[in-house]
Image 1: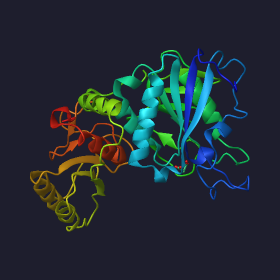
Image 2: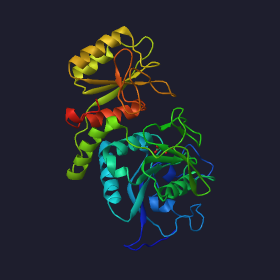
Image 3: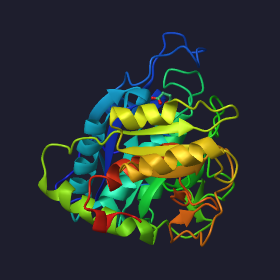
Image 4: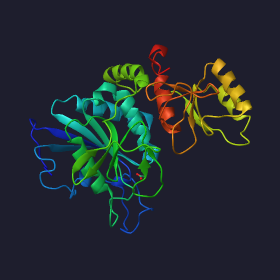
Length: 347
Ligand code: SIN
């Protein structure tokens, strides 16, 4: 790895935000009780398992943007990160951006970036990576994940916002954390990875990800905001509520009365809610609250009327959903949609 770089050299920008990959414990056998986000990202570059020449002619420039446990990820940090990534991608010599991040909310950051960067990330890759064991562990997984992410960012033709973990690359739309402790903690709810990374090479399993067309207008409006505004826009109040057996009848009217702007209903099965919730959601919608749904099933995708990757979906009972997005990412989508004029809204 090169310690110094010249201003005329092609580079990958490495941006640290914290997470377990930068986590530390005094005890190398401790894989659970560590503190996340302790090390600056520069420290993660030491001794990476990269073969000589794996990044030939490409410098890695590093910067620590935040050092947090990703459970503490915030709206303002998202916007700061997006602006920084956008600026880096705009530099001709930048091949792509790699971001180190905690695993717990990584999929939300990935989708946020995919939406707000839009076309800017359609020419070059933005690759988030992470670890399930802290950097201080006897056998940390972070160095391998980071090395793979750098290799992926340096791959000709790579583009879109992706997550690189445990030798696999996942697109931002479908990726989700699916296990609290295993090293291969991520999947795409049943879909194959975009690619695998084997022996410092990216082996494609699908095409590089593109933004679904239902996000495009929102994304274009947000990209303009990202280019011009310094302060992040005010975060719209959007919550996720889970529909369950014996569901509470007080929750939805209380949220409406309190002034909520958007609601993601994590519905049962293929997007079902009981009759009371169906009625209460209708009332909220009439009052101006934007209601969308996702499934509480961990795998598979909601199927509804005219559902396709490129069209908004609608459940049989008339609830609208964002195809391929779980509840947490649907919340990100709805917050972003509420920032732009209705004409740019994904539905
Ligand atoms: C975090 O999300 O920052 C902590 C957990 C992890 O990275 O695995």
